[in-house]
Length: 251
Ligand SMILES: Nc1ncnc2c1ncn2[C@@H]1O[C@H](COP(=O)(O)OP(=O)(O)OP(=O)(O)O)[C@@H](O)[C@H]1O
Image 1 (tube, rainbow, N blue to C red):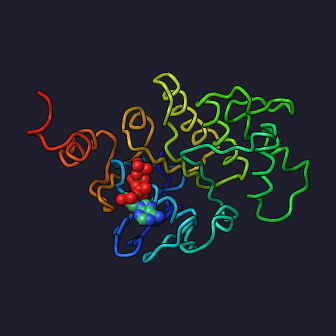
Image 2: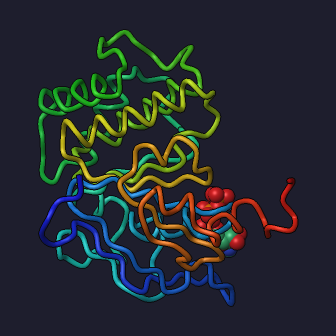
Image 3: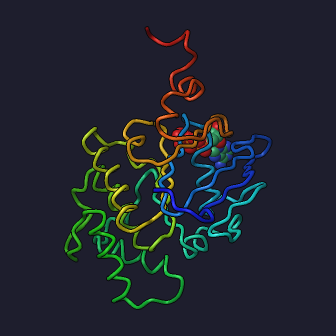
C-alpha cells in the first residue's frame, strides 16, 4: 500500500562512525507514506545504528535524514518523538511499578508536541493499549506479562506518542512461532487501520516478508539489496549474507 507523493522518510548517504570504525556507510533509502518497510540484515550489519540515527539516539557523522521533507538528522530523541517518530526497543524496559495505563500515559505526555492535560494523555494511552490488544483498565500491571505481552506494551508506549512513523526494533525477538505471526499481523493492522508508516527492523526474515511492502537489506553497514519481499527471497546476495556462500550450505 505504498502511497504516492513525497516520501515520509528520506535517508540519504547516512554515515555513522564510532572512532575509526564505520558502522553505517552512506546508507540511502526512502519510505513512502503508509508503507511498511522491512530493514533487514545479519547481526552487526548496522540496522540498530541506522535506527538510532533516525530516532535521535545517535548523531549521524554525515548524511541527511528527512521526515516529511524536514531535516531531522542530529535532533535529540525527544525532539524526533515530538516531530512524529515513535520507536520500540529491542529489549522492553517498562516502568514495572506503574500500571500499563500509566506506562502508556507517560509516553503520551512525552510524545505530545505541546502540553496535553492528563485526560487527553489517558485517552491517547487507552487507544494505544487497545490497538496493541492490552487491557486499558487502571488495575492492569506488567506483572505476569510474558515476552509477547512486554512487546505489546512496548508497541503501546510508542503508539501513545501518536507517531506518523513507527520504528519497530526486533519485534519478534524471544517470541514463539504463533506469537511472531500475531506480532506481524498487529503491525500490519496498525498500518491498515491508522495509516501509520512503519520501518521494521529484524535480523530474521521469516514472517516479516509476508507483511512488508518493500525490503532493504544491510550488510557491513551498506545497502546490498532493495526490492520486494519476493525479490529478496530470490536474491543471491541476500541468500549469501543470511545463509553463507552457496558452497558452505547444506545440500
Ligand atoms: N556505540 C558503539 N561503539 C562502537 N561500535 C558500535 C557501537 N554501536 C554499534 N557498534 C558496532 O557497529 C556495528 C553495527 O552494529 P548494529 O548494532 O547497528 O548492528 P545490527 O545490525 O543492529 O545488529 P543486531 O541484529 O545484532 O542488533 C557492529 O559492528 C557493532 O559492534
